[in-house]
Length: 589
Image (cartoon, rainbow, N blue to C red; front, side):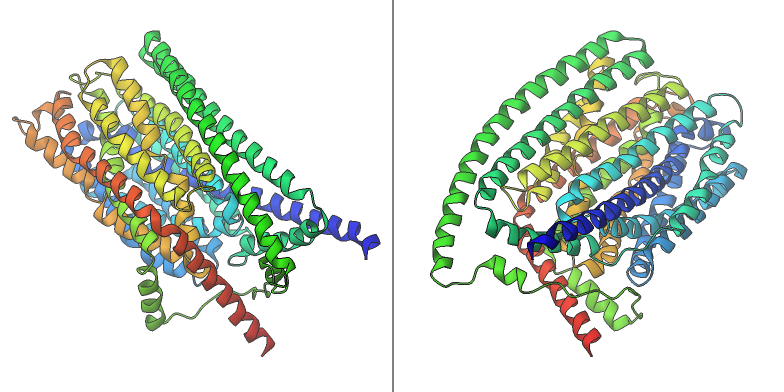
């Protein structure tokens, strides 16, 4: 048997490389679409001050336009998610990208409130279908172990798109009367090319990456039975991998503060801000590094106790008890049918959604997103407008949009990548670490947000704004991965759609409208403040009294709800195993 082993291993290695290479290609396409998704969404926000003053709109009307997109986007996610679970997900992605790209380009023709309102509604229809289908599609290219990190990097595309949308809208709108229309044409056309590339993607089998990973683990079990020293090596590799993750996370944190400080200082022409950013970044890195060393010590103790438990288990196996490894090896996963389309049935649909609502971790993550989405949607929609007001920072339209986009994307990418690393590190010790990271991030974000909107120093505002943007997006990768992990693979798109429907409908769908109405109410002149760029205090109060409590609630729900993830992941794995068994029986019949 042994003379043939090298060739078999080589074939498996070559197949693994081919699969990995195509997964990377698919990731690049989906990352680019996610970038375009948020660029088209936020180009309006970057240009909103110029659009509002040119067309005679008030803060409340700008809020209504933002809510028009969010409401349609929210209501559209559910039917598109159901459709994605019953057809080829790549086709759903391609269709939705084409719809929202055309809607963005046609926004350039809008000349009044109604036209803008309708164009943003159509944009919501297109973007509603991408997220459920896109996350489910990407999840089948990467296994559970890699999913949090991959989703964090994929989510970074949304922040880069947000930045480019802010800058594109603000800079072009600042060129002169009516120039904002060009921004919508520039951002809308590239989507048609990406729609074609998405349509040409290979559709993976449901749960394909997890099944491949399980096959590799079964092969490794045989090798572990032959090599005695492998256990010690694996233990050392685990410590080294976690330490590398800590170093990478700290590198992104420090790099984010340095880059954020440099860009902020350049835009504001105040290098004291840059030095403050760097100093705070260094202090945080030192503190976190000390905590990480303590965590490494705990990990070594945990590994020692695990090794002793495994040795005790080995003694029991020698006495005749079958090992778990042997059970896994003797039960290979059956093949999954290539055609994945399922017939539509209202009865089956009802069963699917009632089963999703029984997953406690999914309910927790949905509630976390309800509260967090409100704070995100409310603050991002009015951030460039707030920075432009004379009683806030008094920046130009181009400066406000550029600063908003650049700082949010730098801080957000650092936060999302750190969140992915942190969730993967803590997942070794706590099975609900991905949800726990979400809760901790939001709870820490609440006081930072409150300080950002109440301080009057430009330097202090930018520092707390950067920290807030980093913490508020810490959840992105862990939350997305947690939803995919706790739900059976056949219902992943539906689960994302259900979570988004409830989170957006109860969270940020009406948040911009509420902030606009509250700011208008706090204005004693009922609109004159915004017309003369003096609405900073009005927006400050509206954001403070609504967003901070929402962030506190999001944090508490995440922290106390993390305890159910372990049992929910196990239930999802059992459901997938049962589905594979049923599929195998059908093939045999």
